[in-house]
Amino acid sequence: MISRPRRTRKNPIIREMVAETRLSKDMFIYPYFVVPGAGIKHPIDAMPGINHFSVDELVKDVEQGLKVGVNKILLFGVGENKTEDASSSYAEHSVVADAVRALKSKFGEDLYVITDVCTCAYTTHGHCGIIHNDYVDNDETLEVLTKMALTHAQAGADMVAPSDMMDGRILAMREGLDAHGFVNTAIMSYAVKFAGAYYGPFREAANSAPNKGDRKSYQMDYRNGREAMKEAELDEMEGADILMVKPALAYLDVISNLRAQTNLPVACYNVSAEYSMVKAAAQNGWIDEQKLTLENMYAFARAGANIIISYHTREMFEKGWL
Image (cartoon, rainbow, N blue to C red; front, side):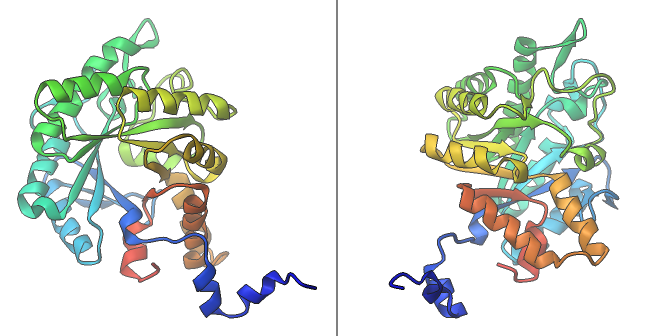
């Protein structure tokens, strides 16, 4: 035989030399759930190792994370007053806005702060928009989302990340931010967010499950890969700086196709159920947690993601897995 591919797998040194996919700490973003109050650090049962934090406790935890290299975080607000119009989502002193101010005051440019922009945790019905006649009103929702993004930018957020899946929201936010002088506030779009079962633990964490119906009229049908490319292309045309695919593990083909379509950075969200399944299996002794976690991370990167949002981030950094 002339060709023997095993030659370059002979030992760890040559395997490292020819590895096609690399991971680095710079690729990872760590999500946090922030709640009103003080002195709160409350475990989320469905997501072992993940907690609800009040702002004061969040600052302490972020400080510890920075010591191991966790310098990019994504904030979700939980526990605000829920209304039909989601008005608490864009209040000047919403828990997310207060958290951003506290974090930027303490850590400045050492910490990159991203905020989730969606109404689901702020509405009585739990949907990602304003409801009229039992249907989420797309264009009225855009006004709320733009106000929310602006509030976060005014508080000091480096980037906003709309996860609502309303049509036209990237353009609405870009125009709203620019009109108020926030031309350098970046937008990471949940460009391709599928409706499915992978968000179960998150809905406990964010207290955001819809109390009627589902989200299939605005989140994407998981059977549609070509439509995913259309959604991403529209968001790129509207001014998104980063395009995200969510969930990640069951949608590696979508990540790969998007990587081939765009020159923008591609992110993926390693969502709650993907995380919790690994944790549950590890707790039962069924898997090697480190090996399986890293295998998933390399799969995301191999598919084409150069940014990975994952609840595993902090533990991977602390335990030196990367």
